[in-house]
Image 1: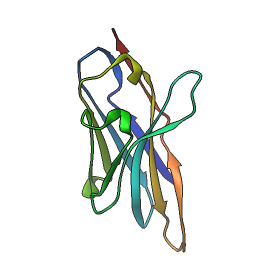
Image 2 (image 1 turned 90 degrees about the vertical axis):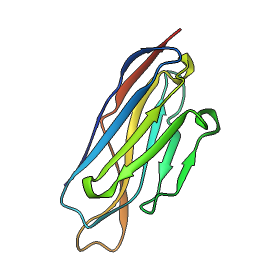
Image 3 (image 1 turned 30 degrees about the vertical axis):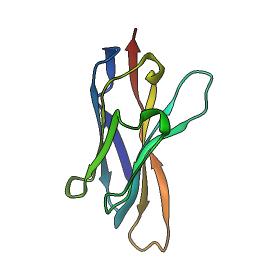
Image 4 (image 1 turned 45 degrees about the vertical axis):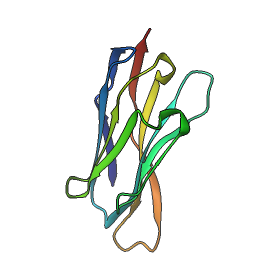
Length: 121
């Protein structure tokens, strides 16, 4: 019913930039919070940044000042602009959205398939 499709990952040198995009499609009533998580080998999946439907943002301490999350509600899309990338940012990045379906009283989380970001030193 709801699909999240990420794009924009790739290989970049340290200090470089990438922009991730995630588009939500399907049949749903509304999207609440959207966010980006990342999973590196040997680690757990951690929140990178999140944004409410009104634009309030939240960032992990490790990315503050380097990453910027934004969204276009008309396009059901969330972005993650990543600047000053470091090798420690290497991970699979996953899009997350809290979605309320039609005729549903509650919302639930949906996940994208992930996009790999690799930062070389």
